[in-house]
Length: 437
Image 1 (spheres, helix red, strand yellow):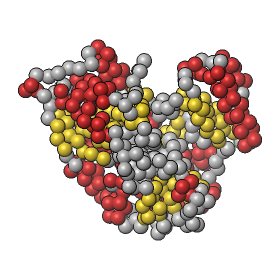
Image 2: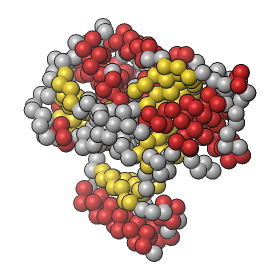
Image 3: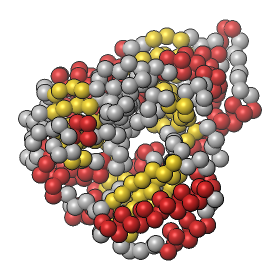
Image 4: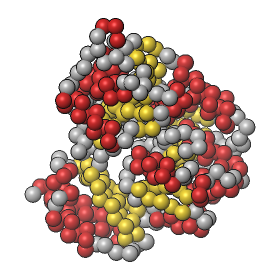
């Protein structure tokens, strides 16, 4: 069982759960685990002020064990994923994604992909058995700064889309004061996308603070008819769209639109799309009408990617906007998601409003219930009994502990909104009662 690594690396409150000491141990253990297979570790970070100290600690730990380190500064997670794939090495991303600045995280990438659970378990084992290994003086790794690696990704994206059509629409970008701020203007300007850029002025503590993909209403409530809002999270591995009247176009809808376009252009391998158990039933029905099969996995983009590789699927993702175009990048890439969506709209000759209004979404409620002991809740007998009693062909219920935050997440979906609301409230009450027992 993993203790440090969650569903998206190691994450916690900075200087409480996630300290410089732990970061150094992780850097050292990752170096020991991969030495002999790779000679270089690339480290990137998002815009959190705590990224500097964690970057230094990880680099010191890795170099002490004998691994050379290259720092590329602030870039999106998908930028690092692309670079590690192209250079054939490992990387560490220092980010807590959509979480506020009080949190930070460390995730390990190998040739563009998150390392498997088995590798995370072995790395944790190295930390437990021997927190540090120090190489002899002549084998100590060197640490250098190589910002030019970022340009490799920028040129790749620009070259991929420079001949693609884009719709003539007004775009407002919400950069979440995160890592997208280091690449978005350069790419959009090069491709001729006219956009008004908001929240791309990070100061170390304003990442995801009342902005970005978790706060679509900030942009959504001021949009006028015909305008499109594009929303990123802190490390830009996800992207959502929003329309006038605060109409959210979530990951299910973006995947549906792009799946239709990819099938039309012969890019949708095996006519399959991979999504999680959280994706809306309306999304599944839309794909069925187009002759596309939906394959579901448990929650977590790494599990989506595993299923995509197993089934040779080209498109997969999550409702949150974490979407993988596997023929373009090995991880969710918010920038590529935005460009693919614009290209799909132009090529299909439709507006996003038209698509959104005709999409067959079923009523669905998501609730995050704060808890102090997630295991206690999942073991609660009364909760288990109620879930068994609620099983029905007319309802879809997912209740699971968050892998990164102190919450139990509840999703209820069905055809009748009043029933969905009532069932969700009942489950919230039960979780709270189990917490207080």
